[in-house]
Image 1 (cartoon, rainbow, N blue to C red):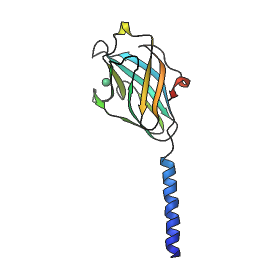
Image 2 (image 1 turned 45 degrees about the vertical axis):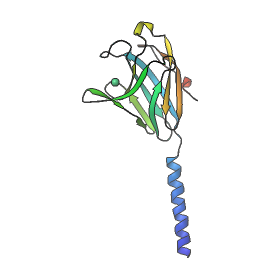
Image 3 (image 1 turned 120 degrees about the vertical axis):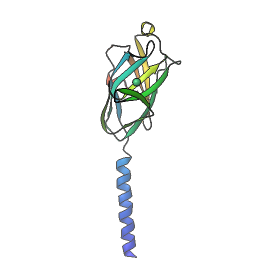
Image 4 (image 1 turned 90 degrees about the horizontal axis):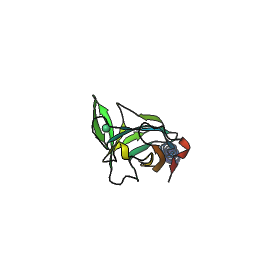
Length: 154
Ligand SMILES: [Cu+2]
């Protein structure tokens, strides 16, 4: 009887500890966003590069949208053997993930042409656990970007 009780206590301690570590909330900041017109795909298509820094527990990057351009469509991409392909999500562990040429990046289609693009627009990044993270002052291609402080969670 006593043995069973001890086992039960140990088991509950084990569950408590493991539960704790995996439940740590993500703490995500999106930095250094740069948008570039796609060289291959023509007018109105852009690639996006940035760094996602996660100071907390694991999360998943699932997509994004630009409220100023409701007609546009958006994709997450990765690159393998020099060819890019669409992916559904990107796992974001504690630490930093760089979205860059030749690796993870975002793609925007059916956007205004380069000349018609406003100087500043908004990107809303979507995460499984963190929800929407809005970066309101993304500069048009070749611009400089986005202070960390302006990333705000809704
Ligand atoms: Cu791509």
